[in-house]
Image 1 (cartoon, rainbow, N blue to C red):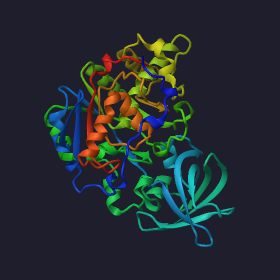
Image 2 (image 1 turned 180 degrees about the horizontal axis):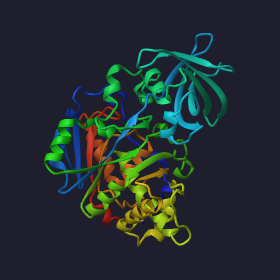
Image 3 (image 1 turned 180 degrees about the vertical axis):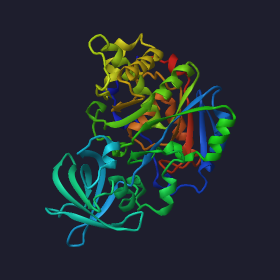
Image 4 (image 1 turned 30 degrees about the vertical axis):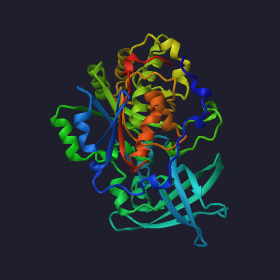
Length: 428
């Protein structure tokens, strides 16, 4: 019988991680990272350059092409004291990330505020230089504070600058807090994937950091099919699980964008293996199935029309609550429903959001394997790995610890191929 993930305790998903095993810096050569292959429970030690020869035949690799924005702003109070503003999500005048980054003159974002205890009122300021060498100033004023975050009103001069340019010129890369160091010029290159395209993430999809243009060319030469989705990684990816039961841990919302071309690619590729490059790609792919199921279940009561795009969201526990109703809905039907929705709304890109939590008890619908780094103890990312591999996740992590693998964002990688493909699993 599969566990109810809401009753799981995160304390059952831990392991000892010495501080010296956390990689503080990236390797100069991306593809020189080690690769631990778990193939149906059998472990082998490789390097990342060996990946093309380790993939199952006829695999489709799905990458997350989000690009990390320089979301940390270090402003100063009139006294000279520094205040850190970590931009999480836009609030006004646009909630759409794409529109918010193009906003000029002023905007409001939800932010984490560091060293803000003595910042009572009035603006903090940041002097910077634009990419064109022009002097510029950013003012930030705190409007309200709630749940550990604050609404921050920004305005800047020159007002014609889009906010994306303000962040590029004035901001810092939001490195994971466990690295405990400021970002460097090297991070500006190495904390982005070589295929990053769509600005909007505040954390890198780190599984992709190992790929080089040469390795991607080798995959293409060998006929390995690839595709791209976009999930803008939020700061919630670093949010520790503090609840005793997972039912009491709120998952953060992250926006996803998927083209009709990618949906058709998935549809025609099945039932051959689909592998996710990173947990964000995996969550996006599994979200697609549940979005399609939701459309199918509401097809009798709602017909989308041109210009009326409904909000599409997969909530934290939706797959587990809908498991029985979705038991006989194959992935092909869900993908077709999404394509029909795009046709009906006359758009070629699916825009949606996900709070999906994947934990033991989850049944995978679209993903047959995962390329991923080694994750923190007691994290939702480790829960996802445990859902994919079952109890053998412990053997993978014990092997990595015993054989000198480097952990977390700048660490080594793994190729995880479970005993059963997505089509053969049981559960939620």
